[in-house]
Length: 389
Ligand code: SF4
Image 1 (cartoon, rainbow, N blue to C red):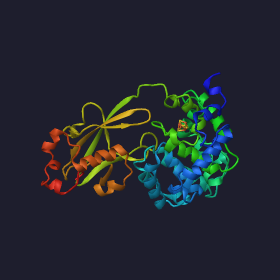
Image 2 (spheres, rainbow, N blue to C red):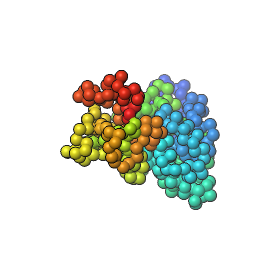
Image 3 (spheres, helix red, strand yellow):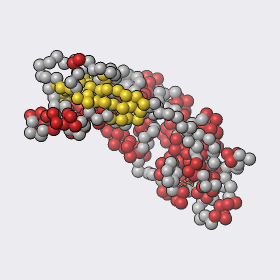
């Protein structure tokens, strides 16, 4: 019998292991019982979105938490909620303001979809977040697992979640073979996730799965010694914790390079609005220069150290090129921002890093450091305390 087809949980070896003090997990229902008990006694109860779990707050937190850790999300969540306290204020806000508050959190399509969904809810649901699972899942940016989480936490629905952490927990606890991103494996995990649903305490159960995946059954160094389902975990019993879930088959990650112009004039720096879709869609970024020979006007631009950024499907090496225009020179069109304005501008994280480094004088290449006014603290430029001048 293949490992993945064995009975979900067995107790015979549990008694022999001497771990009888833990809740007995003998069948799928026992898994939920142990998890609920653990979540209520030991799980997380003080997350900001748990204090007032209305649909808007739950939805916002679930979107921010996609591919992002709780500790990173919390300050963004608080700032976002302070500016957009409800769905209608988000729907009516200027898109640039939404993007500015998302700036640095990454995966910017989430912010665009969030606002688009808010506008659709205002237009088609009278401004009330829909309760039916199918209506929730039909909104932009909300997949099956996120829709279920919203329905459970906001409306007490009985629905299964299956995000990346939960896939890992179930693959280990139930010995599911194969890479969870494969369709057949994912389908099997969904079936398992639905079969495990308890008849009540859905919020505690769902939160328990999330807490277990985030705090104990982590990718590296899981803490099996304090896990509530230790006694019946297939991976632990068979010493396969490190092997499950199976990783994605290795593939080469493409590498791309780009030159970006840091053009300064009179205390401001030039930025361009990115197209609404694609990488960094809707954000402000530094102008990209063609590969090869620089346009004559920027021939004297000074290369700064390369900034490397990893996207999901490729790696990007950015070479910033620093160039100053004299006050009287004709400046190219674009969005010219002062240092103060850069603070709140919607910038991708690596672009913000480049500008911060320039401002701090950290990004200066050795040939530039010798010549730059930024390297001479008493110069008028340095006194202006402005890396963008
Ligand atoms: S016993 Fe270890 S591997 Fe199994 S579910 Fe718990 S933390 Fe994960």
